[in-house]
Image (cartoon, rainbow, N blue to C red; front, top):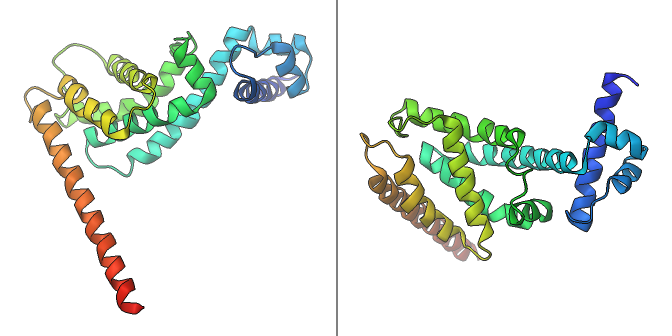
Amino acid sequence: MTAADDGTVKDRLIRAADTEIASRGINAVQMEVVAKIAGVSRATAFRQLGSVSEMLVQVARLRARRHTAAVATLMTTKTGVFAKLETALVYTARELPSDPSIAALIAQHSESVHDPRVHQVAVEAIGPVLDEGQRSGQVRTDIGIGIGEMVDFLVEQTYRAAEEIGRSDDETRRRFRHFIIPALAATNGSGGEHLSRTMEVEQAVDEALEALSNLADQLRRDRSE
């Protein structure tokens, strides 16, 4: 079997594990079943993935890549570093609990969630935004920590928000604006409190403009009837 074949088999096993976890849950997943779904032997499955624990890490990486791709797309619709980060946090806190396997990983504080390779996916998604914020003077540089630690902080806060069942998007935004922005905002800039209030005003203006647009559309429809 060639290296290329190995990669194809491994990818197939990871997708099979992903399907099995979504169907049966994280505690019921078995390497033998995953191997059967992927159409390979149990020995091949263990050779490719090593262990059930490693298999869970690989599934977490797969799901993290899917999720961060969606987050990256959403962030492109926003201007401003903190607006982008808020969008990422709100979306993630809302969507993660709806993913059965990720929800299980979070609930168990599984090592697969905190695996360095999963962490790297988050760094690749959020790191450039934080770096942009530091270069523009919006994100602090005075505390001697790197982008990776800031990403860890944001991921931790996101998991905390996701763990609270029933938390609304507005509550997540409030958490971000009142606690996370002040922790990340450059002290020599506008300040976390000012940025938080500015974002609240901007959101209110956006909502007002949307309401006016909807009203104008309704009035046009009424005239045409």
